[in-house]
Length: 105
Image (cartoon, rainbow, N blue to C red; front, side, top):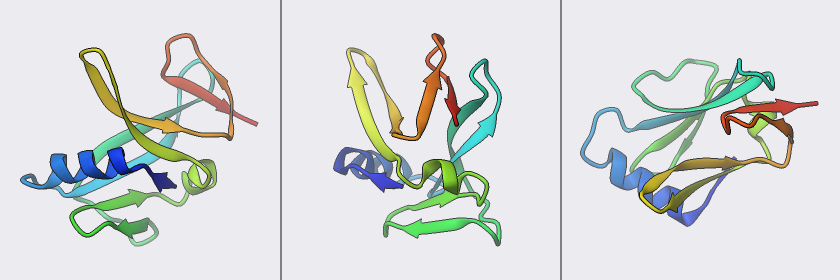
């Protein structure tokens, strides 16, 4: 998974004065298209997790999510008053109208 400069800057800002300083990104089953992304701040790092150290924070992904995320990019988007991390993934083959659920072949 790649991170844009905007995502790195926002991750540093959000984790700089907080505990935990790990950002866990993954894919879980659910939603009408079959899968959902999750992005959360986490203290736990499991032995089989992939960890990428960005100095001020660590990006953590579980081994089940890696095949879904290996070509994805984590970005920070701001649209009007709304701002959040956004995963752009060329492996997605479907998405739901709700904007949360995604599908893969």
